[in-house]
Image (tube, rainbow, N blue to C red; front, side, top):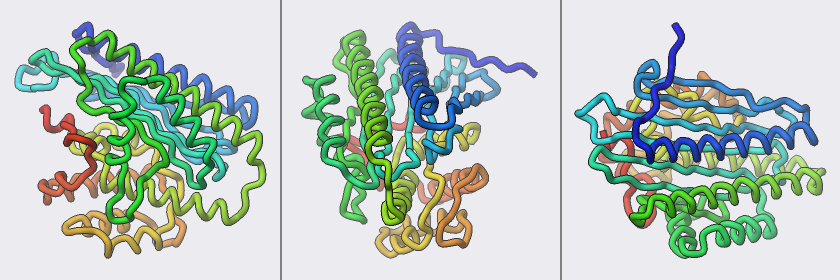
Length: 347
């Protein structure tokens, strides 16, 4: 059966979806150019998924295939819509969400998320995120990423930077996930065109600046040591921990439906330090220590665990089971200046 993703009818939703698809193509083209110049010339491969067989939309994710350059990386876009269901408060949500983990431990990871959410009552808002996530910090990378995002959003940066630091804080470890963060939640000034322009400008700045940082790292930081790779493994473990225990967007996507589990968790790093992950269990407040133990049980018993698609599927089921048993634990997840509404809340 040939399935088709039915798009939202709203003009604003169509504009939002066009924006995130344009950003996806921009990023994929630039990442493919890096693979061609420095790697094995293997382009990102697309995979399409469907929400309710396309009746309520779906999306496309591009996954890295060049393992000489990328540890794990994906660039995802999606649009879910409920134009045919009067019982839903949510009209549509259009998003790009991407994380790039380079193979070189001396090159930082990056996360970017931009989405437009529109309600049946006509209200809507943007969510704009960009953060640099190095295993090994370089001051010049942090300074460049920070300055370019500040230039791209001179009126919003003073709010977005500290809000991002708060959202990506990991309380039990006493640190943030990345070194510099940009995060706007529930952003809507009443001028849709101006807000969309800001989202576009920030997205393009984050993509282009990261490509510059990654290119420079590949060209100049050519001799990582075994200790560097050990630090990267430990950082990837921290990233995994933050995403699966604190990130509201990830949890919301998994709780709303089970039709894109692999896509939602597509960018988890390829390997983890199981011993390090287990050592954080004693730091977790109840009932989240049960969640972490469930996550650990999804992994193999090796000290260095590989995260494959079957692992992601098990992790998705683990999170759903935990929050269905402990719904109040959702209040313990990350927030910026306000607790962000999730798609689940809107349904």
